[in-house]
Image (cartoon, rainbow, N blue to C red; front, side, top):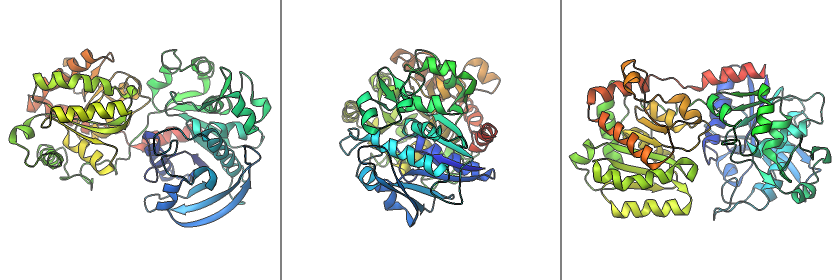
Amino acid sequence: MNVLFASSEVWPLIKTGGLGDVSYSLPHALQNEGQNVRIIMPAYRDVLKVCTDLKILGWMDSPYGYMKPAIRLLEAKHPDIKIPLWLIDCQSLFDRPGNPYSNTEGHDWFDNAERFTQFSWAVSEVAMGHVVDDWKADVVHANDWQTGLVSAFLDNYADRPKRIFTIHNLAYSGNYSRQIFDDLGLPKQWWSSEGVEFYGGFSMLKAGLIYSDAITTVSPTYAKEIRTSEFGHGLEGILSSRSYKLSGILNGIDDEVWNPEKDPYIANNYSLETIEEGKLNNKRALLEKYVDEPTEAMLAAPLLGMVTRLVEQKGVDLITQAIPSLISESDANFILMGSGNPYYERVIHELCEHYPDRVFSYIGYSEPIAHLVEAASDIFLMPSRFEPCGLNQMYSLRYGTLPLVHNTGGLADTVVNASAEAINDKTANGFVMYSADTAAFISTIKHALYLYQDPTQWKALQTTAMQEDFAWRHSAQLYLSLYK
């Protein structure tokens, strides 16, 4: 099948979260299953900087938007992208600094509605074979609100490809006003409760739900959760009424990129057989970035790691509130990586100043250091209030770094709590808290630290964790079944 995979971000070209990782790994897994895949994304400035061999495949004149811009389709190459990469190029919309959605000061681009309307329309034109003469999609796989209008634009064509829409995080739904809808000149027939209208405005994500042939989300548990008022963000009725076309397919991970035996970013590669020495050497390498000479006590103490966006969804406040208590009652140390809410960045900075030998941080994101955090940590902290799938807990399992998670979404689908029963039947691979509050977080941490004191027990948990297989090939086969 010709599969057009549309996303607003793709690692390693540009990435703000898990969507970027999925948009790299899933298309490659589909190609490995014998499909003819194209990745299509906006030609952001930072993407053009790292691509080579740019070639113009065609032009489009948009009938929508304030400017009705001329748009080019480019083909590009990057050494890590092993399948054809197509870029939607419109300099007035995408040639600017900052990340895909916000400027260098962290504020959303004022014209995001137009940017992703034009992107979605251009994707629909490419999918229909109106741009590249000898290529038309059999399946268009669109991802999150930035591509929600793709399926709506394709609704104009009787001979359209199959339309798959994946929700990566329902909390971000691309909501804009009626005025913007009118100013963009979008089709008037879309404006209804059975179209894109959403509480007086319009929702790009809702368009994906309404007009797609199949809806997926990134874990089975999250597919159930989003049909409830607690997690549905006002869309639970629509999702419940369309449950016949909604399924949850667990994200996978790239087990070549995230592989402690081959990882080029870590100080000491290791396997299950050499995990004690490997993790010790990685812990030393990470701590040496912060202290001149890590002491034997620091190396023996459990290291608790975090790599996340600094937002309330991720339970960052639970971690920062718990650290003073945990430091006073245990020998645990902390390594915290992330960026986002300036308040949490400031709180983490203050914790590092107050506990200079116990709390270490990296404000921002670094792929090499993120890998080293996974390899060096003993416990990975992921107490998200909600988590559609999550990837870091699966990376952690691969590295023998036991994840501590909240019982929600994909975290519930991948982590088995180290209860006495689960330990006895060798299914335990981490630690699960069952309410998203600081008391539950501290209690779960204390249970984990208690088990850490028994090396034999800890190694058994690591063994179960590292034997889990969350490679993308399994999920890719499920997507292929859905496409067919």
